[in-house]
Amino acid sequence: TSNKNEQNSSNIDQTKSPLLFKTENNAVSIKINWNQEIQVGMPLIFFIEFTHPFSGMKLQHVNFNLDIIDSNGENVFSKENIHTHIGDDAQDIEFENRGTYTIIITVLGTGIDPPFDSTRSGVGSISITI
Figure 1 (cartoon, rainbow, N blue to C red):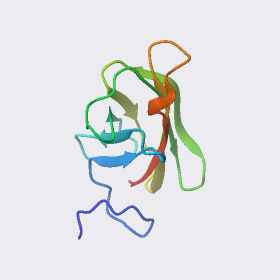
Figure 2 (cartoon, helix red, strand yellow):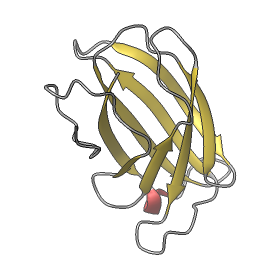
Figure 3 (cartoon, one colour):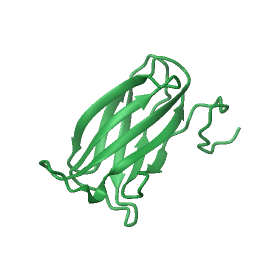
């Protein structure tokens, strides 16, 4: 079995940590990590890290939305206007069923108060198989 993070619906293996992806405009690099096996119906912490796509430095004061969509297009997790001071965040996630999910992170921009600086903003998504 390959350990590559090949994200397709025919892959019956659980996705391995970490997930690495960028916003569609390459403005932000995102890493999602977890430190335990993903089990259906059990809480899991996603550790989310935001970095500059070229320097690799952590971004500060990142504002973002987090959505998880199941294979039927149903939103199974949604949290808006999350703020991280130092580029790291932790979110409690629970998957109710096995299958393939799409994680969507919408980076709204950086800053403490709106309007946010949108230089580092955009939408990034990646699939995960549970």
